[in-house]
Length: 99
Image (tube, rainbow, N blue to C red; front, side):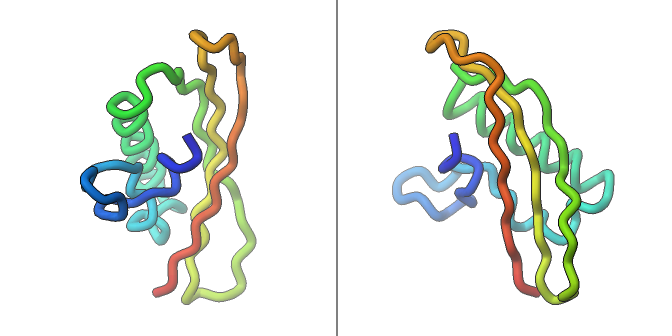
């Protein structure tokens, strides 16, 4: 699941659409539209490549950033995997993008 979240489209050989493609949203995540787009991308990629994962919550993280040329995208995602008896796990993802 971590690899799915951190992979952008075109980075995986023979699976050009694998990943959530979150890096292009790094500068937009502070806005409501960016949060909605990130949530939609995570949901679509998870349903396609890991349908056994149930997404529970998606929370954008507030990350202090003193350098305006580097965007920090952060999110905390909670999920469960019923087929493996895994209940409510959380993963935090932080991506950096340079302008």
